[in-house]
Length: 124
Image (cartoon, rainbow, N blue to C red; front, side, top):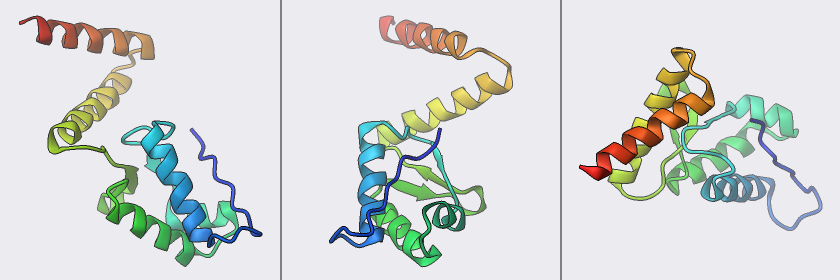
């Protein structure tokens, strides 16, 4: 998945604000799913032709808003929105998706198994 970010140099909005707004909108709409790993500050700055400090400022604002989370050396990811239960469920879903992929399951098979598990849990 590639980010779809367009910085308009003629906009009245500062480049960091344009970046912050676009990433926030994409994360909140689901276009960037929870757990999606974002590019490094330097990598995104290079891709967009911006200064690294500009991207870092946008990332800091997004983190303060709860839109993204930095996991140390592991990188920066789209955060789970909502309450703690939703965050825990999103984390569990990420773990499941990673494990299913490592096991070589197709996307369809992984989704089918997850649907069956949810169906069974709610029928109890």
